[in-house]
Image (cartoon, rainbow, N blue to C red; front, side, top):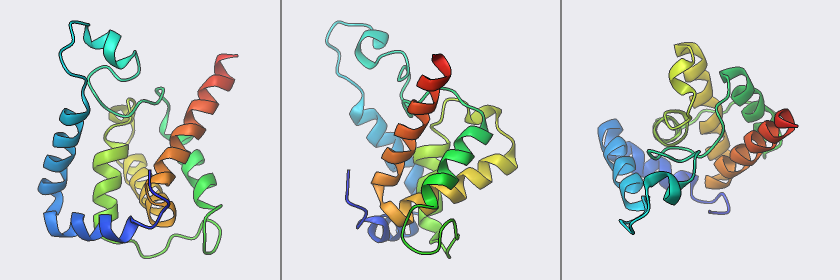
Amino acid sequence: MTTGRGAGKLAAMAEAAGEAGVRELVAGWLAAERPGDDGRGEEERAGPDQVGGGWAVPPAGAAVVLAAARRLAGGGPGRPGARTALPDGLRMIAEALVVDEHPSAATWTATDRTEAVEWVALLLHRFGEDGVTMLTAELLKGAAREAR
């Protein structure tokens, strides 16, 4: 992961590629990250949370993901929780790489999905890829607490 300095580059690349280009790039990354054919089944290679690709977080309602993203975004540089003018490229990256990859995203409302994209884009803007790492850790901790 980066130290948060790459958000501007990510946004510029996404702007240049456009939405279709970002989605194609993401598909290529996901395909490249899938384990090779080593004789084991997909479940053995990837683990139960990663079958079929996607973001390896437990299923969660939009309210849980939004609350975690808001809380984390409030701890970044700038005014706590303030949404700054974000490059559209970061929104595309947030949507394609994070929100669309959440295992429960298909059950969220359009409004929840749009809000999640905004908060994840803000995390990317403030922390770079580390923002997604922080969000993933927060969601995994929450699921572990609920499981107890």
